Amino acid sequence: MIQVAGKVTSNRKVKPGYYLMAVKCPVIAKKAKPGQFLTIRCGNSTTPLLRRPFGFHRIGPSGFEILYERIGKGTTFLSGLKAGDEIDVLGPLGNGFSVPKGKKDFIIVAGGIGVAPLVSLAESLAKIKKAEVCAVIGARSGKALLCEDHFKKIGIKTMAATDDGTCGKKCLATGVLSEFLAGEKGPRPVIFACGPGPMLKATAHIAKERGLECYVSLEENIACGVGACLGCAIKTRSGYKLVCKDGPVFNAKEIIW
Ligand SMILES: Cc1cc2nc3c(=O)[nH]c(=O)nc-3n(C[C@H](O)[C@H](O)[C@H](O)COP(=O)(O)OP(=O)(O)OC[C@H]3O[C@@H](n4cnc5c(N)ncnc54)[C@H](O)[C@@H]3O)c2cc1C
Ligand code: FES
Image (cartoon, rainbow, N blue to C red):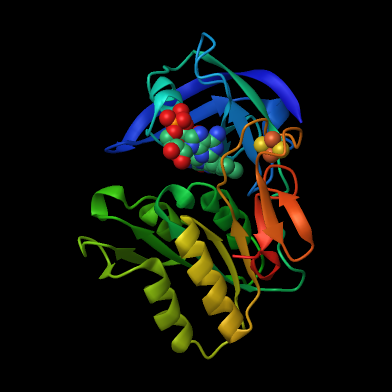
C-alpha cells in the first residue's frame, strides 16, 4: 500500500450524476488488481475528514480510472477536479477478485455504481483464452445504466435490466440472471457481483440454489481503510472479517447475510 500524489489527467461527466476520472499514478497502477480499491482525500481542508474509497474501474501501466457517483461532499469535491490537479491517493487496498483456476465461464452481475470495479475484472477475464464472459447490468433507469457499451466492445454478451424498463428488461438484475441461468446448458459459470446489498444477497441465493461459485464485492462504510479501526467488520462463517482488509471481495457462501 502506497500513499502518493496522483495527477488527474481527465475528469468528465459520463451520465447525469456519474463521472469518470483518469489519474496518472504508475506506482499504484503497477500493483493494483481488479477488485482492490484505493482511498482518496476528497478535500483541501479537514472536511470531509475521512478519505473516500473507490474501486479501480480500469487499470493501465501508468495510471487508473475511477467511475463514481456524485452523492455527497467527497464526490462533489472530486467532480470539480480538472486535468492537472493533484489528489492524495492511498492504495491498492483490499484483496481483489481471484479467478478460480481452470474456469472459463463467468457471469458478471452489476447493480448501479457497483459496475465500476467490475470493468477491470471483465477486461482481465476477457483475456483468458477461450473464456466465455457474460454480464448482467442493472440500474434504476437507462439514464443510470453504465458501461453497457464498454462491456460489448470487449466482446462480452451483455444483458441490461432497469427498474423503469427504459433500457433492457423491466426487472431487477437478479431477474435477468435467473432467467439466463435457467436457459444455460453449458459449463457451470462462476459469478462475480458488485452492487447494493439486497442484490448481492439475492445473487448469493441464486448461486447457492444452483451450486455455483459466487464472489461478491461489498461496499461497507470504510473509515481507515487499512484494518485499524474495525469499523467495517461483517459476520462470516469463520467469525468477524474486515471488509477493507479481508475483502472487499468475499466468497458469497462465507457471508452470514
Ligand atoms: C470498497 C469500496 C469501493 C467503492 N467503490 C466505489 C466506486 O468505484 N464508485 C463509487 O461511486 N462509489 C464507490 N464506493 C462508495 C463510495 O466510497 C461512496 O459513495 C463515497 O465514499 C461517498 O462519499 P461522499 O462524501 O460523496 O458522500 P457522503 O456525503 O459521505 O455520504 C453519502 C452516502 O455514501 C455512503 N458513504 C459515505 N462514506 C462512505 C465510505 N467511507 N465508505 C462507503 N460508503 C460511504 C453512505 O451510505 C452515505 O449515506 C465504494 C465503497 C467501498 C467501500
Ligand atoms: S475501515 Fe477501518 S478497519 Fe476497515
